Length: 491
Picture 1 (cartoon, one colour):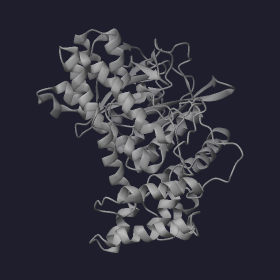
Picture 2 (cartoon, one colour; picture 1 turned 180 degrees about the horizontal axis):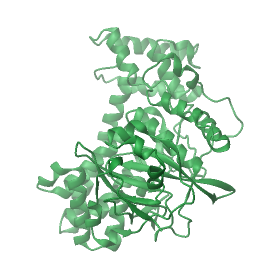
Picture 3 (tube, helix red, strand yellow; picture 1 turned 90 degrees about the vertical axis):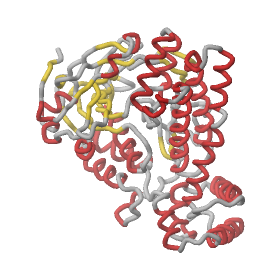
Picture 4 (cartoon, helix red, strand yellow; picture 1 turned 90 degrees about the horizontal axis):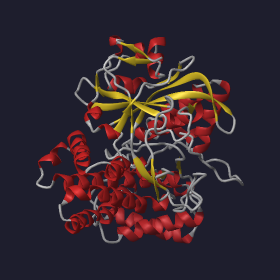
């Protein structure tokens, strides 16, 4: 049985505002204890930013909390209910193996969800065992920290705790629990659930809670629920543009994996693109390429339309007018997205201002990169340091012509070369979590209990814009392979 522990030295300051929502939205439940909790990875910098005592959390008692064997004072664990469109098909979902311990309040007054992923079965498990394997939990730790280093809004990982128990997938694997930190776990699918199975008043309570938690300024608007829709659209536009600019492919953009806070959530079959290809997809279950790299903006718009549908009863008493309001907000998506994406692409090319020919300049470069299967990250890195000879396009006449146009375009802005290069350096990462490097780290950790490879990788990925000599070995793409890299929904 899970024990309650005060553990004041850890620095936990729990609140449980989610539990004031209608009971339909969650099920209160304690984690299922594990046999032999052992902390294998701990995020010291994140703990410090949360105002937590790393020393206390690294202790045996701390590991017991992070594994769910002990519940810290003030926490009231619950599993959240939600629904979602998975590959376009609507289904009832919910936290099948995750439990929200509560919301930790930092000394600065910020509120963060503390969730245990792999903490045992819940009423939403749909036949699953409620557990998680060590490898996928470590993978989420690596990728989420890499995203944070890249400056992309993301949930983060405080710790990975081995359970001392096996989990059974295709084979027997070591079990683990991930401690996830998020601005919240409110999703598009949370609203879909309440819209489908709740009353309009319960839906309104959820919307009011979301406004208060994430968009307090919108509460005073004349149409607060329309403002909520517009705010969520804006945050998703910014997030997806940032994904595209670094070549990140989420892999499972179901509506339950879209956080209303604008954070990246759920790192299952995700990966970063090596060779530029709009059709790039890594997920083993995405046979049709629904969530391919080039489709991500379109899918985000589709998901936001589902959010708007859920909000319709709150937008206006007249359904036709509610639809018009929703459509008006959604109509802004394309222009907003292209604005953020083109601004980011200009920065990657060292362009501070805007000219009409920029769209063609960017599209020509991407077209050549696709044709020559140029490495996405390394191409922009080579351009940043004026080393075109390091790209596979070097020597092609069309690339030479493009370079002339690009240099002429740069020369028409008043900024000196030093400022141009600084802009490019902070817009083009030197390193991303290359798939082969991630697999190398996971193999050492899971098979040999050697976490030094992973720790080194996470350190390198924490400062992707440094462009220093230490990062050089992590910039190399993988060797060509007859088998494409595949990812799985293990997380």
